[in-house]
Length: 130
Image 1 (cartoon, rainbow, N blue to C red):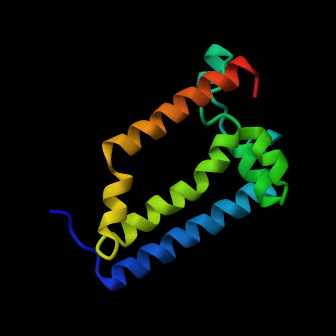
Image 2 (cartoon, one colour):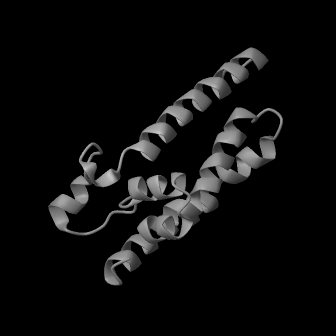
């Protein structure tokens, strides 16, 4: 059985995640991704192909600059997955209140659909040079 976070524990978790998110947002908004401060993709350096995450750092930077079109151009799948990631965090944090949501998001079929989407995206973006 998983330990259940108390109300105070949930509040501290939300505050900690919020502080980390703000710090990351400030870093990504203020430092240009091409400056060399961010890590490079090892998969792309080795193979010359884009991995599913390639362009995510530039996409985050573009989003924080308010350039949604550029963010989509850097990594459309990553931008589409941001709401899903937020939903996953929400379902984990409030799993006692919304157990059905957690069951849906951890369902094997749902996970396989996400995995298939990522694989197809990787193939398509390398064929059509997205």
